[in-house]
Image (cartoon, rainbow, N blue to C red):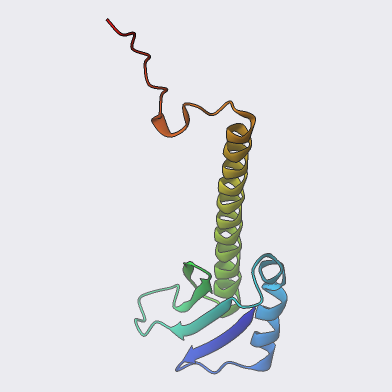
Length: 131
């Protein structure tokens, strides 16, 4: 997985990059090596907002884009929240794909065994006797 970290008017130091890399280890194992992750960190300029440190993540996978955004008073905490949200989304996406694949395989197996005459709403034509 390719990880790109950008800071909007916020410096991105090596310690922050290493922390993100460690936290994303689990997610990186579940997605393709071709997946691209963009993380953008910034600070909200409004002084009345307590959760001013914001982290946004966009994960580009084959056919789907997953996004997460979280804010908190600490940047590291915001990054942890974003990584947790992405991990949940990746797990849900993988489970959904696995379920579809298993359902498709089961339908093919039923059709091959001859039990699938009524597949997709196709009922056998009623026999008509000549009068």
